[in-house]
Length: 188
Length: 199
Image 1 (cartoon, rainbow over the protein chains, first blue to last red):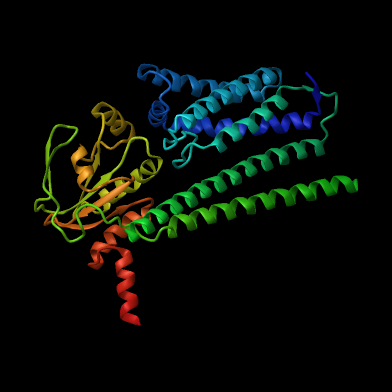
Image 2 (cartoon, rainbow over the protein chains, first blue to last red):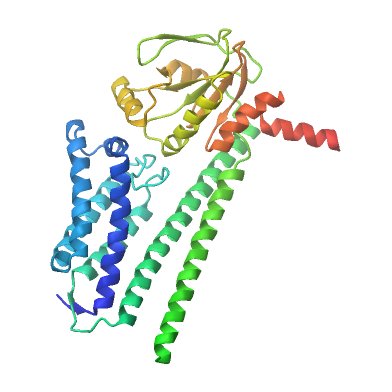
């Protein structure tokens, strides 16, 4: 594995910690609803849903802790990569099935499925690969830590902003559809 | 201090402030979309018309209690059509719960859908909808020509249809109730009447 500057690795790992913390928080606060959402994906038999939801939650908490501890960071980043791939796969299967009007279960107000979610997971996957890299022997000075912290904050804000824009885009599409339907009915 | 260090600090500060601005702008655009588009609960013309008596439905709730729609009742009835998989329906559930509390004197709320009873029982439990009468009836949805969700129909105490439409947000659901208070079939009608009066 190639070695990268510690700043890059800290930014990647820190951003992943924030993303997974939000996901785990969402699952922990409403596990019953998340279990139901998983049912809507129609990938697992009903009796496996509750254990699977609980398992995913525990796995996410383990990934968060593992990414923070330097010794386990590469391994935890690997697990995170697998988790993201599984989520992306589940979403992709349902997109192919045309089953797009289910809740994605990714937290926040209801959001349907779209290829954007798969792309987002791919970008997060790149961050996992960066977080798996070994460190170049470079000293982490005060400025380096500042850059790392600012980098994490920027990445998280950027994700939140893009997410919000995608959300707006789905509103725009929905209102276009109702508008067209309304006009169509008006001319009948 | 090394000028390069100062530059890095200043640039990071600017980047973060800019990203906060981008996020805030995106949020405000989203709020605007929710508020304005489309104005009021969208009317659809199929099914029983506003001002007509609702056909009578004898239904059974998920708890096995009989429920009759379309007959004179002590209060108005809001029938909320949903499906277990629609994200927007899920978003409106907290609104329904607060509406039930706020308007308990004047308004009864009924949840309607169709499909597998087991799946709906599970959804009802997961979503905390135990307080609402919950009916599964293909006939009800067909008669009101529900083809898009979430959809709401408002019946007055005489069982007359007072409002109906696709509801995508809290504002649209409330506009349906306001339309009844204003004595107009829909907010669109009320605006047209107002404009006609002023010109």
